[in-house]
Image (cartoon, rainbow, N blue to C red):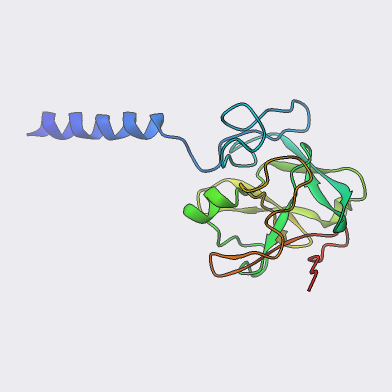
Length: 171
C-alpha cells in the first residue's frame, strides 16, 4: 500500500514537471525569444518566463497614439478588474492575457519611476506600470497590434496604456 502511494506521488510529480505553465515564454531585454510555436502570435504564449531576467517596457506609435509595448513590440494592456497592483487574471484569463513577468527596465518614453512589480498567485513576478499589472493579448498576432483594446473579457475591460500610465480609451 505504501509503495503504491509512493509510486502515485512520483507519477504526479513527473506529470507536473512535464506540463507547461501559463507563464512560460521569454521576453528578455537581452535575447529576444519567440513564443511557443516559433513565430510571434502563433499560440497564446505568455509574455515571459518565471524568474526571467530583465524585460523591456518601451513605447510604440500607432492609431491609438503612443502606447506601451514590451521589448518585442507586443502591446501591453491593463485589466480594469485589477485594483492596485494585485493581479486577478489567472488560469484561463492568463492564457488569453499573458502577464508580463520579470524585472522591468524602461526604454522609449516609459518613465522608469512608474515601473514596478507585484507577486502573482503562482509566485511569479509581474511587471506593473503606474500600479497597473501589465498583460499582452493572445489575439495580437504581430508587433504593435492592439486587438484587445476595449474588449470586455473575464469580467472587465482591457485597455492599452499611455506613457503617462493611464488607459487609452477611444470611446
